[in-house]
Image (tube, rainbow, N blue to C red; front, side):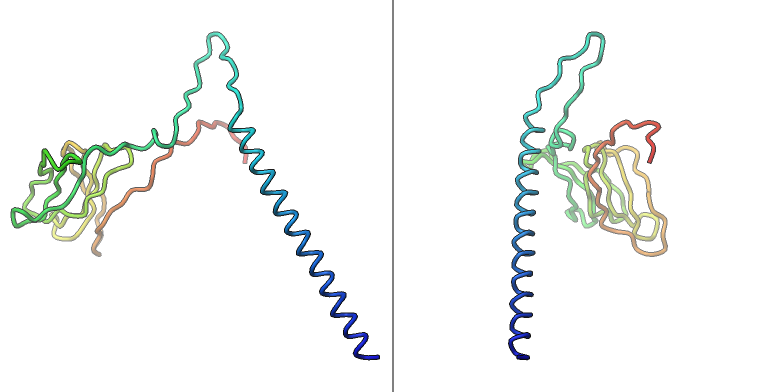
Length: 167
């Protein structure tokens, strides 16, 4: 008798588990189909005509928001000292941007392509500096007794203008 009760309990548990697993699969499939349909409907949404006197909405793709790289920034020790250079993507028109007796290395373009961050020991310690892509306005960003090197940028994605939004 005991084994029959145990077998029935195991079978009931297995049956319940199978129904739950089947329900989860169906719910997941329904969610996936709903998402695909929602994306399709939203992606195919027609633009409403502009009202007279209103400014047109500017739709800018993520690709156009980020700078399209036409130059390469790199470090070189060709003169016996680490310097930051830029060049065209085909290797032509190489130009020393830092031209400083200190070691300037680890360059990183800003996402908008207007500035270059780099590491330098010009103040006696490795710090992060930034300059305009035309080499102007070189300035130190960090001031730390520890070594600050290898800067990088986070992608810049402008936020929508939202005023007086309640949270």
